[in-house]
Image: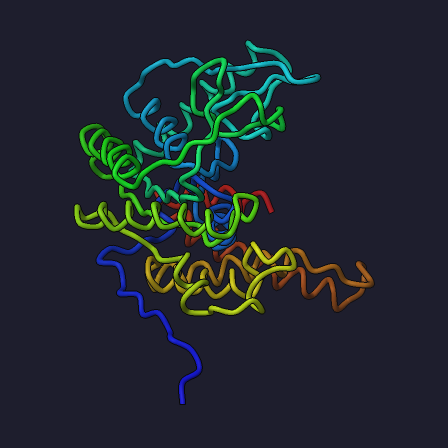
Length: 323
């Protein structure tokens, strides 16, 4: 007897290993997956402009980098720091000039990842956006400004699909080796209202379905929580975010879908060595601990030799060398 419907995800026709750089952008869920990829030794650039929920702000950032266009940072001073309407509040500086420099630095970093043929994971959070009334721009974050400053708008799935298609077209012309994976965040935006949250997610899902027809990859993170696990015991205490168990389950599905066997094997060796390094014994100078450290260092040297034999794993070799 079956008590739940399990979602079967077909394996990706291409696989990733630690030689493949990855860019994770979008909602806080993309950070969860990015952290786990990094723990397996992947070179991951995570939410360089902070967490961003709406697809238009995401595509706007990427198009600026891909097309090499200079755009207004829409910086403003809030308290002691300068922020941007295009970014999360974690992206800030102590002056307008430093904020502009920060933009240029991050843009250059993204460009380096794209030049290396990065895989770009875009996690879409909501199809609701907020328009700054005085500036007449769509913002990535309201930065706790008064609600009267903004007007809420709803993005239709054709518009979302068109914007992402434009990004894909630009990427294919300048960085043909770059792959794009779309996913919809399973996190509920309960402040919008439950009905409104479902309608918002529906637009994202429809946009992803349209884009899938053009060959863009889609990973069903949203469906894994809402249709496979489908129970509030898999939500955190706020009943909006997935629980740790649910995140682990979705992560396992992502690994099986996109990571190669060699990536999993190397990731296991790397993670095991890292965990041993973090072990805190009771007696630092005991014979048993000194023997453990000696064995650990031999493993570290062996892994380092393995990594240095492949120039594409230099980022990982540098990490291990610093231990």
